[in-house]
Structures are given as structure tokens and as C-alpha cells.
Image (cartoon, rainbow, N blue to C red; front, side, top):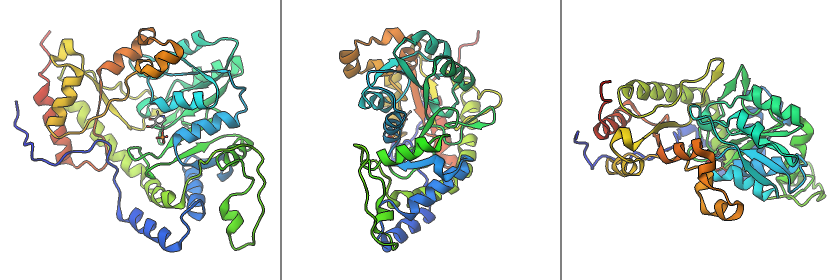
Length: 394
Ligand SMILES: Cc1ncc(COP(=O)(O)O)c(C=O)c1O
């Protein structure tokens, strides 16, 4: 085994690239004494709308993607007890948001190659109670939106796209998040654009976004910036039992500069992605499917599959060995029905979503942050090659 010194610094999985501009803006925000929702959030909404080729009235900043998903479902006016179809290959937040909105999650299995929800499985899962589809653009690869939107139109379903991985993603020339009624983005610490914690909702219909904005701040008709600004005190009215989901200017201060560098960071991740694809081509691990034609992959996660029968090491042993090499990895995701809460509440058995179950038991996400320098990438490559032997000649 190649000797990789255990004294090397730990390579933290998903560590964001923070530059001086973010630090200066946070300090300026603190010096301004306006920490809550205000001009910097408005700036981030403006910049995000420009990036998505939308208007500022089609976007709303919130404090997480989980909040974005929840508020979108509330704003869509779907009756509680309705069924919402989503993927088992996602973070628990996608499913929990459905539950918090009072609805019933229904899982449709994924395509084994793309790891995205399979449109045919969606069609098979539709019942008279289905009201919405919540596709997740897994790892930054767009779902089959033509097929999904066709199903939605046929059955008159709301579509809420989980774009937590998909800020840069396009499908047939169009941005992820702009196909459905709502698109929900994450600015969590490991995401392609970060505000520490944060999220954004986009929607084609401005009235949906207006409703989402009110619901994201207690159901109040005016936010604090408009109440306490220099234009004189304005009364608010509570028009719904809303939530406390607003983003702070302190968070937006980071996001404004992160978003300004979104393309540069994407290019760096693409380079790292391509290096991994080349470096592991002769190993018996399964690599991500190449991006589909006429799409743009956001390169959020680089996931490999460790099948013990061909790699000679189990996935969990591999994770531990990577840790010994001081290389942080992730698991995206153990399939949702593997978790006890959902098994107990919904009687889910992972075997029913066989593709997601198998992928979830084999998958490992490698470091892909733009913060990685070439030496870090070399270390990851050497580490993996030291743990996994070459493919047997056939
Ligand atoms: C697919 C997916 N959906 C939703 C979320 C929730 O995002 P947030 O942490 O911003 O609430 C995440 C976060 O990891 C995610 O990966």
C-alpha cells in the first residue's frame, strides 16, 4: 500500500472556498448594524434572479432549502393529506418537508445509472390522491424534466424541484428550478454557493413567490426592512400563520460574493471531476454517468460505487480507510427507506426501491470543493488507488 503520511492535514469533505471579499462584506454588514433581512438579502435576490434569468419578483431568499421546500408546498395551496411523489435517493429534508406540510410522501425509484428519479416509476406511483412531484436533481445532474413535466400536465400536478445540488444545472438550455412551479436551492456550507445556512425559492408565477415570501416571515405583510427603514414606521398585518424562515443580511453578505464566483468555482470542480474520471478509469469502481447531451451538470457531488464483490473491500471499510488516510468523504445517500422513522411511520422496506437501496449501500462521495488544490486532488487519487486494485483483465 502506498504510504500516505497520517500527519497530513485532514481534507474536510465539502469545505467551502471563502475569500477575502466575503470576509470584508460580513465585517461591513456588522459595522452597518443591520444584521437581519435587509439590503444585502435584496442584493442577493437580485443577483440570483439575474443568474437564473428571472425577475426579482420571481425569487425569495430563505434560511435553508428545507424551509424553501416547506414554504413552497404551503404556498402551492395543496390540501393536506395529498400525496407527493419524490425520490428515495435524497437527503431526508426533501421527505421531511413533505411531512411538515401535512402531506404524504410517496417514493418512486431512481434510474440506476443517473441516480435520478425514474419518470416511469413516477407514473406507476400516481394515485387519485397525488397532487405534486418533488424531483431532486441528484448531484447536480438534471432529472428528465421533459418526461416529468409531461406527467405533471397529464395529471394536473404541482412540481417543486429540489435544486439543492443544482445551482448551475441546465436541461435543454433551461435552468433547473424553472420547469416546475417552484425551484428550491440550498446555500448550506457544503453547497456550490454557500451562505453558511440559507436557501432560495424561485417560481415562474410571481404571485406564488409573493405568497411564499409572506409565509416565510410569520405570515406578515411587510418585512422589518420596510417597517424600520428610514421611510417611517409601517404597520404590518398578519395574513397567515407563517414561519420564521427569513435569511439574514449577515448570510447574504457571504452569498453575494459566493454567487459572483459561481462560474469560476464550477470550472474548477469540472477540472477535478475530469481528473477523477481519468484517474479511476482502470479501477473496478463505478464512476458517475457522463453528463447527458444538451444538459449542464452542476458537478456538486462526485460519487463512486464500491461493490465489495468486485472491489474486495466493503463500502463502510473503504470509508474508514479513507478516514485513516485523513481524507474526508460523504455518503449521499443511504436511501430514505433505510431510516427507522420512515419504516415505522410508513411501513417502508428499502427492498421496494431496489435501485436506490443498492446505490445507497455502495456510494461514496469524494472531495470536490474548488478549495482543493492539485496536490489535494493527487492525494485523493493516490489514496483511492492504494485501497482499490486495478480491474482484472477480462
Ligand atoms: C437534496 C437536498 N435537498 C434538501 C437539502 C436541504 O438543504 P438545507 O440544508 O439548505 O436545508 C439538502 C441539503 O443537504 C439536499 O442535499
